[in-house]
Amino acid sequence: MVAGREIKSIAPNPETLLRIAAHNTPNYSDPSDAHRFYAALGMLSVAWGRLEGQAIGNVLTIINLLGRGHEKIMLFPWDRRIELWNEGFSSLLPLKAHETRATALMQSIKDAAADRNFAAHAIWGEFDPHAPEPTMTARSIKMRPGTLGMIDVDDRRITLSMVNAALAECNRLNLEMTDFTKLITPLRPPPAHIPRL
Image 1 (cartoon, rainbow, N blue to C red):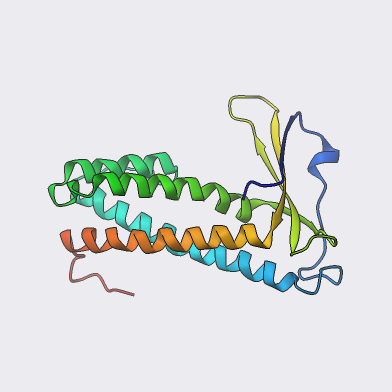
Image 2: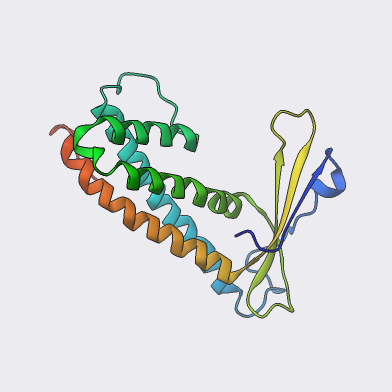
């Protein structure tokens, strides 16, 4: 979801930081087809949760297969997940034959995470009443790593087509991850005393 993107780096500025759309969703000012945009954003959120849950479950299984389940391991940064994933596929004999494809998949998931993070954490503005499809402005504000007081402001025009493309990519990655779940799960089944949901 990168089209229509403008990134600015600025020192904190109240005028920039306080531009928000503080009204109900949906709103009377929304276009008549706004529900399609809102529905696609909701589906993207659920699809991402399914993908990330499956990926984390597989990484946790790999950690246990590597004999590192007792270690304190941070799973939140994608680079750490990729490192553990790649270690499993490069060192566990039943997974080695799938290493190249597994590495590419996890990198693709990390790349897709940028779209998901923007969609989940954006400050959503207003719909463009002149756009040919539901299109909304959105802003991301982040501290610039390694600086004191500098922020990056990322303004974008997000179209329904962009959200649908991100959703399709998320679903594709989830389906591909299922192939790896089928490889990993039988290697170490959960203990019998743990109930399954």
